Amino acid sequence: MALSLLASSTARAAAFSQADASGAVRAALERGADIAVKQLGQTNGFLGNDKIRIPLPEVMEKAAPLLRAVGRGRQLDDLISAMNHAAENAVSMALPLLRNAIKGMSVQDARQILSGGEHAVTDFFATKTREPLSVQFAPLVNKAVEKLSLAKRYNDLAGKASSMGLIKGDQAATVQQHVTTKALDGLYFVIGEEERRIRNDPVGTGSAILKKVFSSL
Image (cartoon, rainbow, N blue to C red; front, side, top):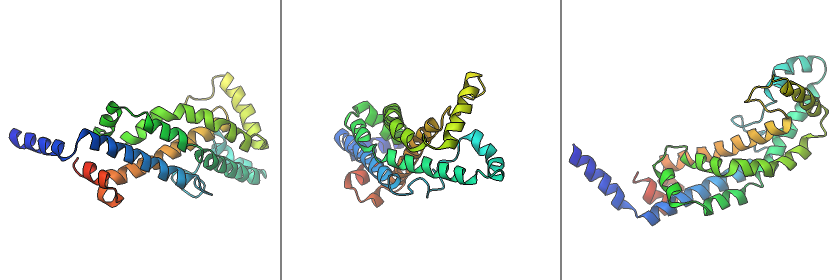
């Protein structure tokens, strides 16, 4: 049994070189980034996708039935639309930072991604780009929602609640923070979906290097 496992491990190692491995990881990263940005950056990229559509902040979502009952339904719908369109516009700007992360990938990064689970690519991007993308997205998201009265009202109330310790750690203190967080969650989610496709069907990607390396894992 031990000899069989050793032989299997040796065969996999011989199937591709370190250069092949790094090339495959780089190709997987580039493919995931390109597809995610293209898909989400198009019109209704967020609004038209049930899995990543950005909902109202949790507190406002709970109050939505009452707000609709008193005639605020149109304002709620406008806010939902503005949040999701702000996300798609912000994501369309993400590709340069994602590509810079790929260029800065170390050999150790490549090894971790290759041997990691089906979220390894997603985790790499999130670790390397979430903070700088949050900063990059902020002005655009703010411009998209700051003029909406419902967003301003929420921010005012949430600010007071936060100062009193009533806002939980996983709840955004402003609509802008909520949109930025959810936009990035959506971006990494779609990258993760593509990563799973690559790992499950490397042949289907049409890429020789992805087929060579990921088929051997």
